[in-house]
Image (cartoon, rainbow, N blue to C red; front, side):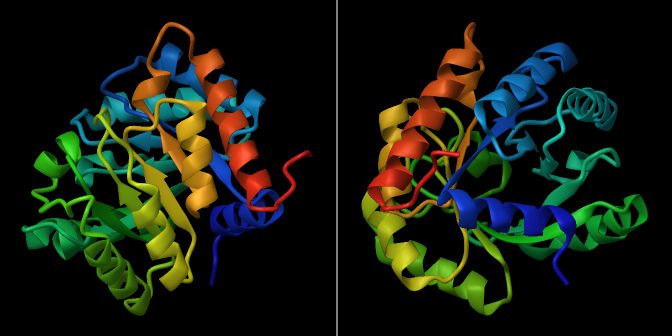
Length: 258
């Protein structure tokens, strides 16, 4: 049975065509800065806030940041964990994800076994997600011991995404890696979306509204941006990204005027 947050995400995608979720890395910001980014995101029309990333942070620091964000916004807070330490009882939901192209079984199924009882105990909504790291991969590839899929090998991304769908996962995340030089290519997004019948998240290397527009037009349902928001004027960047998403959805023939 689908949980409240997952139903909300699916409804938002259906109504808007594509949605924006800012990703806040708790190692790179304090609670005040995290709340500011979350509030600006909500005002601009972001559908949720993701908290986590490829770096390491203590459970205490994570709890503090998640609580601060929850007190600042009404949209859901979804955990994006890199390990067992990425779980906070204060979040609404968690991407219950498997890093399908990791060389280490720990990141494919091991940590999920360890995390499942905690998630149940804390009453956090798990959302099954197939996670794929492509291209440069960034720190995410190092932490997750991934074998990044080369950008030019789109067929490999398609095969992994299909495997995720056949295994019963309900979302796919194509990750280029936080702070990388180039986002996931439109060709790859288009090929995956043409074959896989699941909502598609795309993140990593997205810095401009035009890049967000291109990614949505190619087929992304959820655009995830992190590093580009960690600057002196996150409001301006959030508005730019949101505008690009709206334009991309419009070019696909989906109205985002509301």
